[in-house]
Length: 381
Ligand SMILES: Cc1cc2nc3c(=O)[nH]c(=O)nc-3n(C[C@H](O)[C@H](O)[C@H](O)COP(=O)(O)OP(=O)(O)OC[C@H]3O[C@@H](n4cnc5c(N)ncnc54)[C@H](O)[C@@H]3O)c2cc1C
Image 1 (spheres, rainbow, N blue to C red):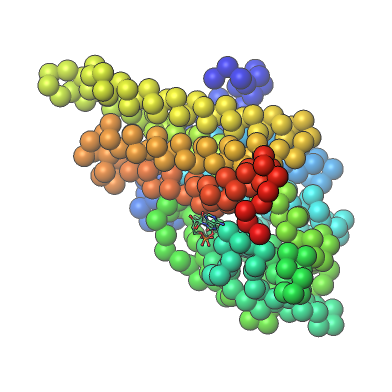
Image 2 (cartoon, rainbow, N blue to C red):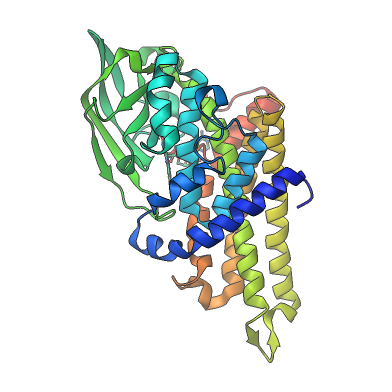
């Protein structure tokens, strides 16, 4: 790819080499067992995962969004579950560093940035998905504590982590303006976690969280009361970039697997890659991958200029998510029956690609948000 600087190329090559040697050999077994090799995470911190986006004054590395984009592409190329896990572990400390009080930063950032503790982020509820502003988990003040009641669903890795950010409303009648973010520490606040079996990214858990009168100290309000949604958007926008570039990585892996297959498998006395219709499929995967990469890196460059890049992140999330599904479907077709077998990497890539169009705002929600931006009319409310 020509749009990377020399330093970025060096980062890409070093992280790719590490993931290929140390993580790729573990993927098949963890995928089969639906587990994650947590022991690899500390070594990943040194590349900029987890602590990268946090400013050095707060104990982070202060990497650029472009560097982050490269890290997420490489994680996605290696294993969808790795990209999903690195996303959540990276955006929670980022959000605390962006809107947390000095006390919250001093308390929560060191264990998250060192990897001693892990984080989750909970917005989605059984009756509030795309329409996050309609969430029903309530928080009411009782002395020095807020009392949380309600439930969340599909929360990534909540069963593997014990510091979370929960979005709850202090006043349902205020709509979005009642929504507040709380930092919940399992060491002091009790809640229930249940695993929900799911199709893609099998090295992650997808959890239901139940809050039944969960007491959270009032100093754990993250940012201002009633400003939770706008605080969360900071993390969600970066999450969109991360998902876009993770999708690029999955597409890249689909391309590499397809080239490997068509240059070795023979039918009709020739390598598959000699047939023009097969070449067309491989070229289509390559084109989807490269166009996705250009849009994802563009969003990262705009964020690096200090601009909000809402439109660019939405466009990248929409395009990269849809494209990786086309690329993964083509890669399966290129592989014939072999691609549908669980021993084939493209079987996993196909399942993991399905994740790309749903979290951090579905494709339809990205379209509607871009429509509002371009046309000036919201179709959502
Ligand atoms: C693997 C995975 C991990 C996740 N991790 C987390 C997490 O860590 N934390 C968290 O809070 N959430 C998480 N989620 C939840 C995710 O953010 C939601 O699934 C997503 O926002 C969509 O909400 P929903 O599933 O309720 O679908 P719905 O909102 O019910 O949407 C169903 C369908 O209707 C479409 N739709 C909805 N509204 C409109 C509209 N106005 N116009 C047109 N179409 C519309 C949607 O695009 C979709 O196709 C995760 C989900 C998955 C699958």
